[in-house]
Length: 467
Image 1 (tube, rainbow, N blue to C red):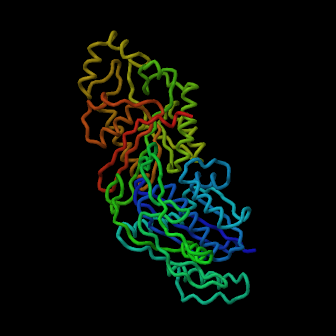
Image 2: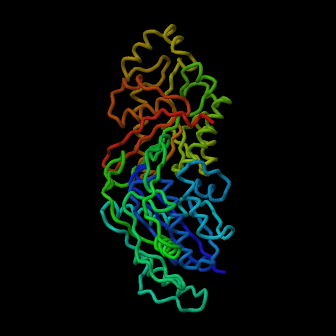
Image 3: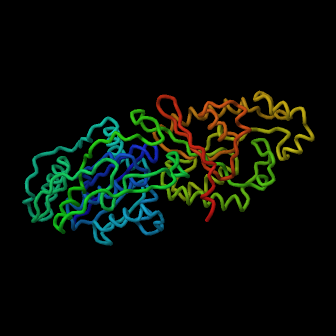
């Protein structure tokens, strides 16, 4: 029995936004790439694009040999865990995608493995090529040679004949011919529509980026096949098609697609500490409290919500205990490591650390009034001014945008850094910091584009904290 490795990926530049997928099928024994598939699918979410990549990879493998065993490798923790049966599939739009994927090969012939993003470069490249082509109104062009496909006349299991036929079929936008069946021809979906079992359209995803989408709604638009044979032909055609009609639909909330994928910061305030409910100043110069039990539960709930979305590719935290603890809970759930950036630490509130606002007003009224009216003013006792904090945050922002260009990174930090990032992205004045509310364990998002502009999603959303 032949064995294939399917590597698949998908992405959305905006989530939802211009989206595409990529998949590659290789021989498990030799490592030879046998087939590639990629497609620009219009406006969709990351999760939809990832599932579409999985479907394309499985269908391409089935076109090569429907009797094969398949090892699927993806960097989407969500898809791998759901398809492995370890996570429940609660979202109504994910269920039909998973069901369709399970129908391609019999149960027990497909295994799933999560791999880090850097080990999924082939599929990631294909997905980005498809999105780049779609942004230009062009069709993705396969790199594999596309000889004229001979009928697969070799002995059963002849890998070279099967691979040649599959490559030619992929290049022509159809599935490889099946024994006893004719060529069904290309079957291209209209932009923005799904096909039976696929989900292409979407609305916004409220909690998480790539800047947040509240839920994915997937229309199904392809007409049903007339008869079982026609259905099989269409499934084969869909299996490995490599191009789709280009779409000119607006890319959702984000900027024009020719700006490329943004660096998207998902901004997570840490969970509660014992000081949070008491509304006490708690900066980088105080006692550095750990999370309370309520804060740890908030961290677990937000971790579960982020895992369901499946969009975060990296986690960076402030060096303080409460943020590192929150980040650790989330990263463990996502299968990621935590990096620490000192620029994300909270403001040092000097002598005000541990005090309530009322206590500061009572003890240091003149210093407090100066601080409220001037971003250059420092808290009593040598604390850090908001102006200096903003400089530090701007330096961290530039550093992180360069490091995570085109990726979605979770920044686990504090009230002042998050408000400052939002203020700077909006071009708002310093006094706007006092006009924002930011709950513990809430999420917001900012996407930074190549032209220097930013797009902000202000959520202060804590719906994920309800079990």
